Length: 98
Image (tube, rainbow, N blue to C red; front, top):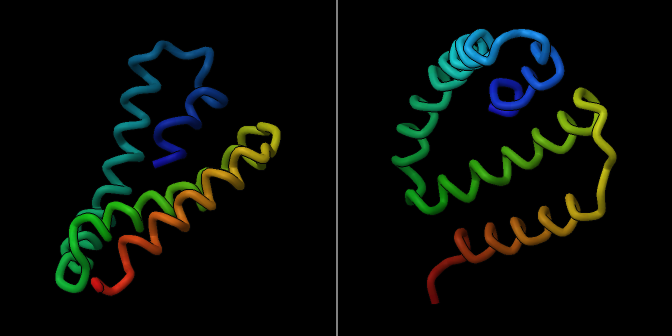
């Protein structure tokens, strides 16, 4: 979703917003065609909360290289701190209940 949400800021910044929105929706549709079945399969073995935390971890893992390499944004130490917070969230969501 990073590409659908943010690539238009670089690639379509001189186009009307409606054009950017329509193109982004098209990209998002393709991504949703993969995401919906993946969630249905994942929900057979994980809880809803676990699926959400997993999605956030994957999002950050994709967003950081996208921001740095594609959007030419500076790499910040805050990315590391956010990643560590998500690792903590993963631990608490996937640990066995005591």
